[in-house]
Length: 165
View 1 (cartoon, one colour):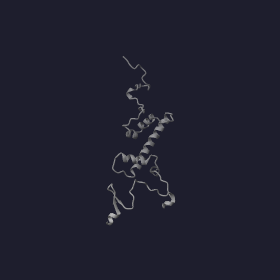
View 2 (tube, helix red, strand yellow; view 1 turned 45 degrees about the horizontal axis):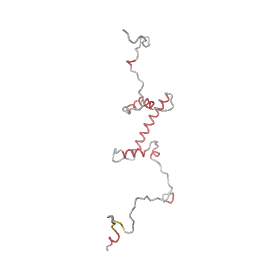
View 3 (cartoon, one colour; view 1 turned 180 degrees about the horizontal axis):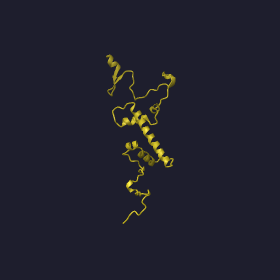
View 4 (tube, helix red, strand yellow; view 1 turned 45 degrees about the vertical axis):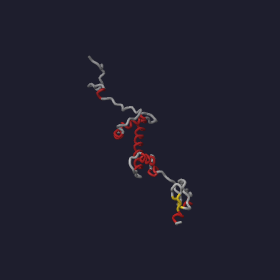
């Protein structure tokens, strides 16, 4: 027998197997010893990317949605951080304006009407969300100038009959 035949056996499945080594049954991760015994020194706790970036919005989840959305073949490491920061800023801006609108209406709870008033009264948010319909938001209070009663010389509204013959 040659040296190659002695060290390599061919199983019935057709795979080569080196003599003396068992075939892999499945991927089983090797557990490293914990603490200082692992040889890596003092172990540090893992921190999320949101924590490292100082954000409340989840960077990992944004990254996952970017990958699963198939917007691009590759997603850079900074893209989900930047996008999470932008989303957090927009949410904070809308919530601040909606909180002001709820306080103006003497309410403690923000409802969709307050979000609608906040968005539509802000020029930039209105432009960004111009095609968005907010459910139960209603409309801005607006009366067209032609529908208002005409003013007379003394400054008061016209109090005469609305229809004259």
